[in-house]
Amino acid sequence: MNIVFDVDGTLTDSRAGMDRGFQREFLAWVGSSGHAVWLITGSDYPKTLEQVGSAICESVVGVYNCAGNQLHSGGVLQDQRSWSPSDELRAWLLMHLSTQPWAVKTGQHLEERVGLTNWSPVGRGCNRDTRAEFYAWDQQYRYRQELALRLEATFPELQATVAGETGIDIYPRGWDKSQIADRVMPFHFFGDSAFPGGNDETIARRAETVWEVKGWRNTQQVLIDHYGLVSRPQSD
Image (cartoon, rainbow, N blue to C red; front, top):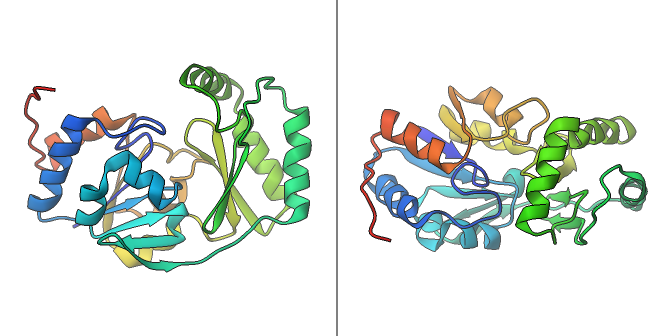
């Protein structure tokens, strides 16, 4: 069976490294489970290496980065396609940055990746406390979901999805995570953003089984209960 895992909020806390004990368990499971394991994330490959480690990245069948627009296997780049935002889109995002109801802005709002752009109302420079405050506010007011819908109405050739705790992923229509589905069918999927408007929604629709998890501990427990992961107490 092919099993596809999101990274942020699924194998790790948001923008954090993988728990060391779970990292060891997961690596051993990848090598012994008999399943074909894949990763897919909106982040770039260097960030994924930082989060889960080179051993996992090189042991899984493939790592799809930037919503599937880039593929590494065995640590080697296999395929990618690129896209850059237009001047009109940049101006539209800058206008909304200046008029948004969330007041705290920490810089690094726009990040261009392979095949997508990530935009954050609060900024990727925020610390953990500000990130948590913004996420709680956004959960209440659904600002990112509403802004994504407005963006798609203004730029119908684009898709915009809620990504992680602070961002919106923007890409040409069809360049979302579901683009890898035909390459890994049939598959089970683990992700934390399979809700309407989330960046896992489209790929989750194609999966044979979907586990919408709430953090890596939830993923760990599902793997123990249903996929044969062996968990042992760790000394560190």
